[in-house]
Length: 327
View 1 (tube, rainbow, N blue to C red):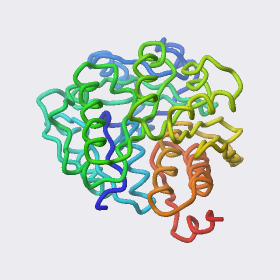
View 2 (view 1 turned 90 degrees about the vertical axis):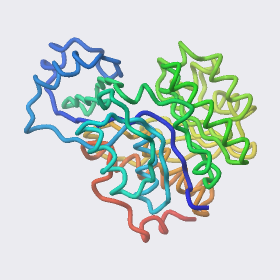
View 3 (view 1 turned 135 degrees about the horizontal axis):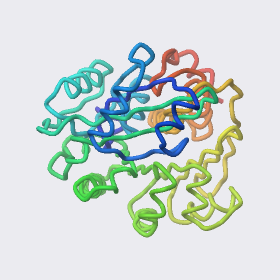
């Protein structure tokens, strides 16, 4: 197949900045969470940052995952909406330079941004201004690209807007029409308080693989024990990939639980750890790896991400390193 993964999600320019605890407290946003802000509020935050201490790259949760797939050597495509401005051009050029296929017409809205404020304890606080990405709609979903893909990967953040939610459902519909598997990531625990019933419907229906962390799994299933949570989800979804922080992760496949050990590293920035974990799983299972080996790749990839700044791998995995993770 031309594409291993076709991602659908927000198209944001990620702007990472190191800040002190005092600076974060002065801004007044919830520590460690993701807050949606308008264009004006985002501009105010950006003006207050030390521009010499920031970096930027093409991003968005699902975008980070398909970039990871491409960095592993896989073929990926993406549906995300940008503005016809300088940031939009930067996002498109960055994605295409990496090798991700993207062909969604820009809009007149400003390109969305995600400011990632990183404190000394490696915690990240995200301020997201969706901008043009909130205008992604069903008409932007490319059926031919989906038909040529092994998996469609949809991010839960799309459910916060009517147009983007419709785009998510359209991508899932076209995937099922063309016998393409569907992977869905819950994205954030706060989404479950808003869309739990809809997410459960997806689990009971078209979703083949669910990505979640333990907090999200507990909120979805109303259970506590990790194994109980994973098994409850697996009753409906054929595959489950549940991260457990420093304790590694748990995969469910064909009725069996596959524990994946964590990789001990010194955490610098947790931005994109879950996104890169998903990239490792998706690349692994589309390149002939077993689920256990894909889990090992995902675990090592997430560890490498948290040991650096930003959601983009600064040191990519070589073919030899990936081969060493096979049983």
